[in-house]
Amino acid sequence: MTDYREYYEGKTVLITGGAGAIGSNLTRTIAELKAQTVIVLDDMSAAYEWSIPSLPNVLFVKGSVTDEVALKRVFALKPDVVYHLAAFFANQNSVDYPQRDLITNGLGTLLVHQYCQMCGVERLVYASSGCSIYGSAAPLPLKEEFMSMHLTTPYQITKMLGELYGNFFYHHYGLPVVKTRFFNSYGPGEVPGQYRNVIPNFIYWALSGLPLPYTGSGEETRDFTYVMDIVDALLRAGYYKQAIGQEMNIASGRETNILRMAESINELTGNRAGIIHGEHRVWDTKKRLLASIDRAKELLGYEPKMEFGDGLQTTIQWFRDNWDSIRRDAEFPPGMSAAVRGVVVKR
Image 1 (tube, rainbow, N blue to C red):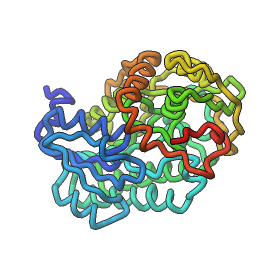
Image 2: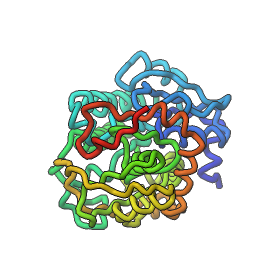
Image 3: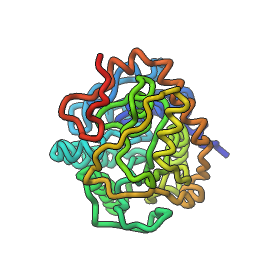
């Protein structure tokens, strides 16, 4: 019986958004599993070329999922498996630029589905967002059966739209789609910035000797998921047939207090600047997040491995090892969210 990791040997795999934090780790892993070619399609709007693995079987194509010239180029290589990770990320970014969010996450996702259907790919794995599509009223732990129409950002709306397109292409054309819902990813590979996740930003500020801006009451939690656990789930989702047509949470299945996480980062980095209270973000209506991962366990055999404290230490070490590149490329421009004003690192 073929192991799910052995399946990728000799395959051609397309990863849209393959230069991003999750995408670059997935690219490296599949390339090292002896894929024939791993094609990275990325417009580099939220990624950097130094993060793309420099391996002989990795092909980088600079382009957008909304550009049909770029799509024709990468699909002409006849990928067996497609991972659609490209997105206009994330909530605050979509609030600031809702039209760009719709074009990338709506039209871009539709085009990827169309090209996958026309080219007869063996599998399309779509990266959805469990942090987004459940809304604020869902009972914990979050389960795939719950649906909400009360979404509070364009990003949440378009991530749900992508799942609905997946449903259509699966039922109408028989396209082998798997929908994976990520929760609060963190780990090596994510450069901090205005629209990035909380952990890389906190590590960046802590290593710069700055206070960490906290916007909650102290009770908020998230389901932080280590990037290589997500990569393992994606490898499984690209292989196991029972996952086709299904949606599933990819998370740690553990609830972590954000305030204590900030305190841990300060302790691990030796940052004595402490924590400051910032302005609440209107769209952030979720006080707690905790995902059920029962379906992913059943369908994929998914078992997250990384303990949160160990994951933080590994991520901090990656920051230290790549500090010059991270300092150069971290993006905190004027006019950014009020919650992080006053803690910008001056270069």
